[in-house]
Image 1 (cartoon, rainbow, N blue to C red):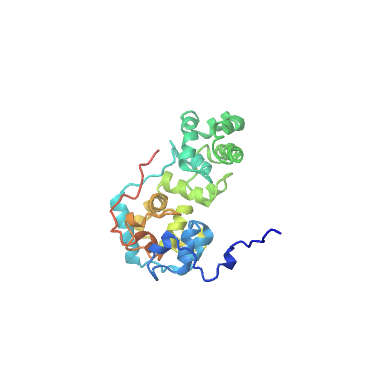
Image 2: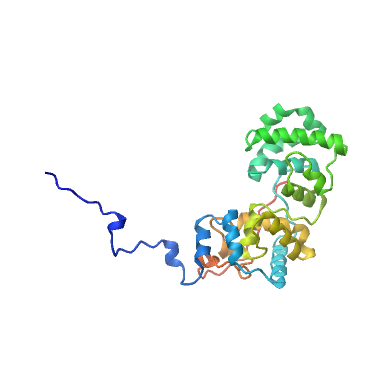
Length: 287
């Protein structure tokens, strides 16, 4: 009879310590609480994890907030959005297209489009079928094309073809939510609005700048704590910082302009004694 063998399963390896990961080995004892390390491993850019971080990270003082924005301003005095547009109408369309899509991906489709179609009238004349074909590389292009045509018709009928400088009016347009309205008000009209996207939400919670469990709470807190002198450009500084430095999975804490101000305990995982370099917080803008 053949001998019965038993597999050396994890449950039977009594007394055998689990292997430590490289990251755990580098982590100094007590450098970051367990919730913070869990946030690192689970892509802490998500809303659920950012909400958990908001409970654990101490909010910044007014002096820390002012200092952080002074540094961002010194590094990038005139930050720009990265979506291509030629006027307020094309900006509105581009921002609405950018939902669940990257700016670079939207730009690839809209550069040739906006060269020919830059008014609501031209958009309606183009028609939904041809617009859909022009933006088919963008996610959810069917819905976005339908909304863009409906939005254009409403602008013509209700606003004489002009983009309204009013949040409520903007949010009344098809496919336009509060974030899109805030972006348009900020970039097209210079209003000190705060558009909270995934980057702004992550940075606000992770660092302690403006902790909040949802987008509305973060927006309200940012509006309350950011000094008026920085509000017009604050939206861009935060987005660019989140996109290029305070990334979701592997934040560049060792290169961060504000790492000495940041209250996130998890930054110890990435700093590990490395002296921070003074890096510019943004990438070149495309318009």
